[in-house]
Amino acid sequence: MDTFETVKEQGNVAFRNSNFSSAAEYYGKCICLEPENPIGYSNRAMALIKLQKFSETIDTCQRGLGKLEDNEKDEPIRKKLLYRLHLAQESLNKFQVKTERLPVEVVDHLPPQFAQL
Image (tube, rainbow, N blue to C red; front, side, top):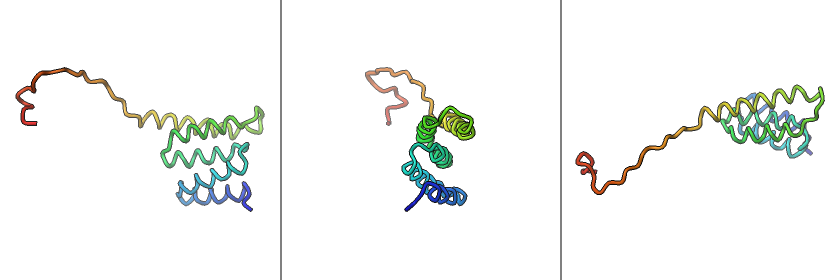
């Protein structure tokens, strides 16, 4: 039977080999095995960042942050999750296409320069 640590190590190997999709799947299994353990969320978030799945990263980080206790022991993982959340939010903002509204004019006929269209 798979344990959190063995599946996490499989994810780490996949991550080191730049197989980020497999790494994200392994870390997802970690979350299923121990849903209250924030480490699975943190590791999965980093794999998702590498896959440029920023919305999913944000959700994963927020879920992981919800699993943390307010104690000194959880502070390192809190910092990682917050940093990864920040990276995902910044990247998502950078890749969002900003559109501006163009005025629409109603015309009865096409101007001559567009008649051939």
